[in-house]
Amino acid sequence: MRAQREVGREDASHLMATFHASVRRACELAQIPRSTYRFEKDTQRDEPLRLRLIELAQDKPRYGYRRLWVLLRWEGTVVNHKRLFRIYRAAGLSVKRKRRKRLVRACQPRTLATAPNEEWSLDFVHDRLANGRAVRVLGVVDTFTRECLALEVDTSFASPRVTRVLDAIIAERGRPQRLRMDNGSELTSRHFLSWGVDWKLQLAYIQPGKPVENAYVESFNGKLRDECLNVSWFRNLWQARARIEAWRREYNTARPHSSLGYRTPESFRDACAPSPRSLEVPQILAPVKAQPYRAPSAALTAAPVRWPDSESGAKQKTNELGQDQNVV
Image (cartoon, rainbow, N blue to C red; front, side, top):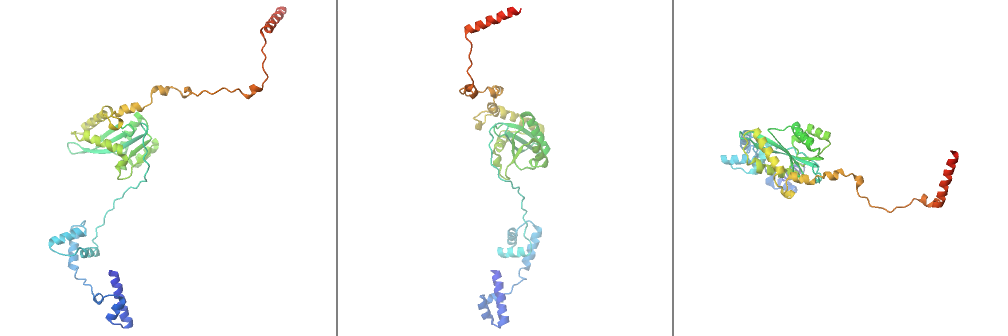
């Protein structure tokens, strides 16, 4: 709208200078009111307000124009918010917003685990000691059996510390096929990525801001916080490690799990494991469907075999004995 007024004012001035038209005629041809043509902007009218805005912005550099407008109203200055915004932008006082850098990952199809030791889920839980010091708990859960493989407690976790915990679990239970985790710095460092390549593991990262993609370990974290962390008072780090490890053993061996038919994770894992008898039986002893015997074609075309009867056989034996006595 303002640009149209400026163009109309320029057109009217051009008509008056070129064709010596009157102001009324030039404004009619340019289709603008005569008051618009005669309007002159008062640049000094907004100067006191601009100076006061600059003072407030220097005192509160992270305040936007709306908060500065409220401060002016508290001082008794009544001004339209649109006029204030125009002066605010012309003075170059706009607050620059810091856009957060977000990691973008391609959406991967969710694969369900069908056997123990196929997929492990990792996540961290935070808590505090009696003296106010923050501690972190690294939880590793088998997605299929819901068994808690480790609960490591410490004040901080670097990437080599995480890999040491996973190496200890792999030495005891074997290597998994896949690890599901979030995009924390401990799990996306070069050390952790190279460790995954060495073990030939599939690192399945969830999309940023969507913890529901790692729902199994998130559900486990809720149980850990509700049944252990919220009802315990840790005096020091060693006491926290002892109590959390005791709860982990109870969770695996004595706590019934609703999604497992109210069985413990350890009993469910034993039920899913193959029996030793089935492992000892070789595949060659498996039952094979009997098929009818078919004689080869060569046997069908060969000449029939004629066996000697009993009398001829006895005569042949006596002849052989007589020949042997003559030789002697």
